[in-house]
Length: 59
Image (cartoon, rainbow, N blue to C red):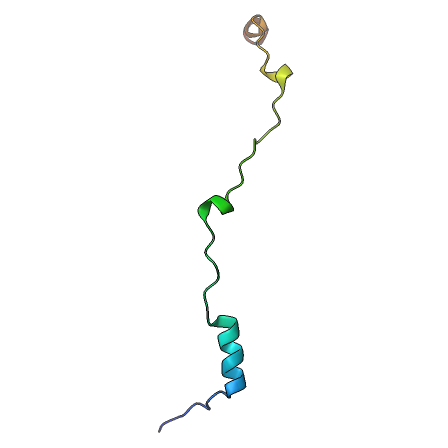
C-alpha cells in the first residue's frame, strides 16, 4: 500500500521559499550584549569611616 502525498502548487512552493528559503542574517555576539553598571555609584555608601568597625563590633 503506497500513499502518495499531494504535490504543493507552484504558488504554495513560491510562498514557502520566500518565507523559509534563506537563513536570517547572523547576529554578532557583540551586538547581543549590553554592558551597564548594576547599580548607580553612591559616594556616601563608599565613603570609608575609620570608626565604623568599632560601632559594628562593639555594640
